Image (cartoon, rainbow, N blue to C red; front, top):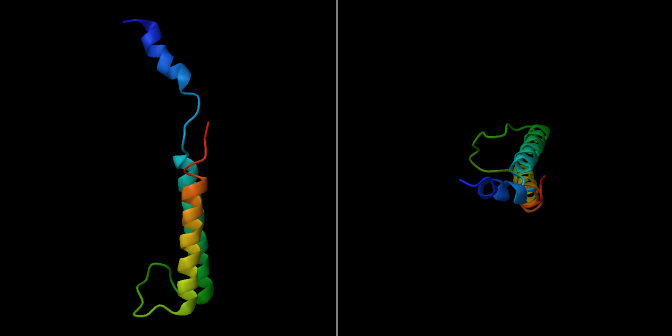
Amino acid sequence: MRVTAILAPVALATAVAAGPIAYGICQTGCNTLAVACYAAAGFTFGVALPAAPPVILACNAGLGTCSAACATVALLAPTP
């Protein structure tokens, strides 16, 4: 087997096209903020409610916006 056949793909792989670690860190930050939002409103994150009050809907909307930002920024950003 030729050494160049093995080393050529390695030499071309200098950067990754996505950052899964950065995405995971970003999602963790989003979830931490959602838990803080729920706690500030006097609720526990992850506990089912019969009807969600408006403040919980606002926390959920913020979590969705943050998660979407993670998907577009952290997951698609080039990472060395």
